[in-house]
Length: 135
Image (cartoon, rainbow, N blue to C red):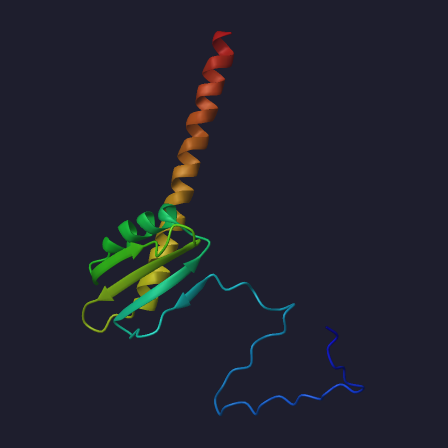
Protein backbone atom coordinates (compact mmCIF):
# COMPACT_ATOMS: atom_id res chain seq x y z
CA UNK A 1 0.00 0.00 0.00
CA UNK A 2 1.58 3.31 -1.01
CA UNK A 3 2.19 5.84 1.72
CA UNK A 4 1.33 9.50 1.59
CA UNK A 5 4.25 11.72 0.61
CA UNK A 6 4.97 15.35 1.33
CA UNK A 7 6.12 17.84 -1.24
CA UNK A 8 8.35 19.75 1.23
CA UNK A 9 10.82 18.73 3.89
CA UNK A 10 10.23 19.78 7.48
CA UNK A 11 12.90 21.96 9.04
CA UNK A 12 14.07 20.84 12.47
CA UNK A 13 15.57 23.25 14.96
CA UNK A 14 18.03 22.12 17.64
CA UNK A 15 16.79 22.35 21.20
CA UNK A 16 18.56 25.04 23.23
CA UNK A 17 21.55 23.69 25.15
CA UNK A 18 21.22 23.40 28.90
CA UNK A 19 23.20 25.90 30.91
CA UNK A 20 26.64 24.46 31.66
CA UNK A 21 26.22 21.62 29.17
CA UNK A 22 29.26 20.61 27.15
CA UNK A 23 28.74 20.14 23.45
CA UNK A 24 29.93 16.84 22.07
CA UNK A 25 32.70 16.99 19.47
CA UNK A 26 31.98 16.60 15.77
CA UNK A 27 31.77 12.95 14.67
CA UNK A 28 35.14 13.08 12.95
CA UNK A 29 36.74 14.35 16.18
CA UNK A 30 34.91 12.01 18.56
CA UNK A 31 36.71 8.99 19.93
CA UNK A 32 34.74 5.85 20.48
CA UNK A 33 33.77 5.78 24.15
CA UNK A 34 34.13 2.24 25.45
CA UNK A 35 33.64 2.99 29.15
CA UNK A 36 30.57 4.60 30.67
CA UNK A 37 29.52 5.27 34.25
CA UNK A 38 26.31 3.51 35.21
CA UNK A 39 23.53 5.35 37.01
CA UNK A 40 23.54 5.56 40.80
CA UNK A 41 27.27 6.15 41.02
CA UNK A 42 28.93 8.42 43.57
CA UNK A 43 32.50 9.66 44.04
CA UNK A 44 33.29 6.75 46.42
CA UNK A 45 31.22 3.97 44.78
CA UNK A 46 30.61 3.56 41.08
CA UNK A 47 29.79 0.96 38.47
CA UNK A 48 31.31 1.15 35.00
CA UNK A 49 30.30 -0.56 31.78
CA UNK A 50 33.06 -1.56 29.36
CA UNK A 51 32.02 -2.18 25.75
CA UNK A 52 33.57 -5.12 23.86
CA UNK A 53 35.34 -6.52 26.94
CA UNK A 54 35.05 -9.80 28.80
CA UNK A 55 36.62 -11.85 31.60
CA UNK A 56 40.14 -11.25 30.25
CA UNK A 57 40.13 -7.58 31.20
CA UNK A 58 37.59 -7.94 34.01
CA UNK A 59 39.52 -10.37 36.18
CA UNK A 60 42.93 -8.77 35.55
CA UNK A 61 41.63 -5.27 36.30
CA UNK A 62 39.76 -6.47 39.40
CA UNK A 63 42.97 -8.10 40.70
CA UNK A 64 45.08 -4.97 40.12
CA UNK A 65 42.50 -2.59 41.61
CA UNK A 66 42.08 -4.77 44.74
CA UNK A 67 45.83 -4.37 45.39
CA UNK A 68 45.15 -0.66 46.07
CA UNK A 69 44.82 -0.15 49.86
CA UNK A 70 42.23 2.61 49.32
CA UNK A 71 39.80 0.13 47.71
CA UNK A 72 37.13 -1.49 49.88
CA UNK A 73 35.55 -3.59 47.10
CA UNK A 74 36.09 -4.30 43.43
CA UNK A 75 34.20 -6.87 41.40
CA UNK A 76 33.14 -7.44 37.84
CA UNK A 77 30.37 -9.28 36.05
CA UNK A 78 29.33 -10.14 32.53
CA UNK A 79 25.60 -9.22 32.48
CA UNK A 80 24.76 -11.65 29.66
CA UNK A 81 26.99 -14.01 27.66
CA UNK A 82 25.55 -12.88 24.32
CA UNK A 83 26.44 -9.20 24.95
CA UNK A 84 30.02 -7.98 24.69
CA UNK A 85 29.80 -5.92 27.90
CA UNK A 86 31.56 -6.10 31.24
CA UNK A 87 30.46 -4.29 34.40
CA UNK A 88 33.04 -3.26 37.00
CA UNK A 89 32.05 -2.06 40.50
CA UNK A 90 34.52 -0.13 42.69
CA UNK A 91 33.99 1.12 46.25
CA UNK A 92 36.66 3.08 48.10
CA UNK A 93 37.47 4.17 51.65
CA UNK A 94 37.70 7.72 53.01
CA UNK A 95 36.47 9.84 50.11
CA UNK A 96 38.99 8.43 47.62
CA UNK A 97 37.74 8.97 44.06
CA UNK A 98 36.76 5.80 42.22
CA UNK A 99 37.66 7.55 38.98
CA UNK A 100 41.25 8.03 40.17
CA UNK A 101 41.34 4.41 41.34
CA UNK A 102 40.10 3.17 37.94
CA UNK A 103 42.64 5.29 36.08
CA UNK A 104 45.47 4.05 38.34
CA UNK A 105 44.30 0.46 37.90
CA UNK A 106 44.26 0.75 34.11
CA UNK A 107 47.73 2.37 34.11
CA UNK A 108 49.15 -0.27 36.50
CA UNK A 109 47.71 -3.08 34.36
CA UNK A 110 49.20 -1.52 31.24
CA UNK A 111 52.61 -1.25 32.95
CA UNK A 112 52.38 -4.88 34.07
CA UNK A 113 51.58 -6.00 30.53
CA UNK A 114 54.61 -4.11 29.20
CA UNK A 115 56.89 -5.83 31.74
CA UNK A 116 55.48 -9.25 30.84
CA UNK A 117 55.92 -8.54 27.12
CA UNK A 118 59.52 -7.36 27.63
CA UNK A 119 60.42 -10.44 29.70
CA UNK A 120 58.75 -12.75 27.19
CA UNK A 121 60.61 -11.14 24.28
CA UNK A 122 63.96 -11.49 26.07
CA UNK A 123 63.29 -15.15 26.96
CA UNK A 124 62.13 -15.93 23.40
CA UNK A 125 65.22 -14.31 21.89
CA UNK A 126 67.52 -16.21 24.29
CA UNK A 127 65.75 -19.47 23.45
CA UNK A 128 66.02 -18.86 19.69
CA UNK A 129 69.71 -17.93 20.03
CA UNK A 130 70.43 -21.08 22.07
CA UNK A 131 68.47 -23.21 19.58
CA UNK A 132 70.36 -21.69 16.64
CA UNK A 133 73.76 -22.28 18.27
CA UNK A 134 73.04 -26.00 18.87
CA UNK A 135 71.90 -26.63 15.31
